[in-house]
Length: 91
View 1 (cartoon, rainbow, N blue to C red):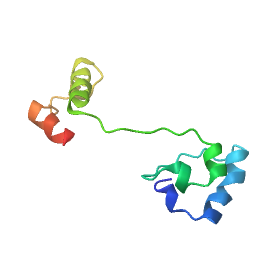
View 2: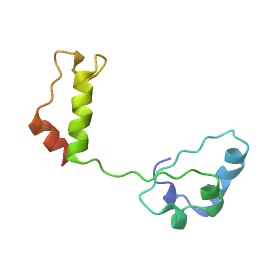
View 3: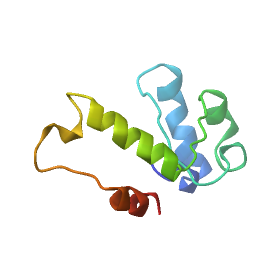
């Protein structure tokens, strides 16, 4: 669920029984601090991951790895990635 922090308390509470009994595997995304914006009971039943923006060097490494892999993106003749396009995508 994207922007889970926008759900009100009743909506978040409605998820709890389903999460607790395993019927629902809850995967939520929020741009806010979940410890303040998401129901404490839901947070306590969750594993929280904080994602960080990739750097230009990270993107270069991913692109280089994809180019070396036989199953990677570059196996199709129509695909190529220049240093300029990597720099642009990092922006």
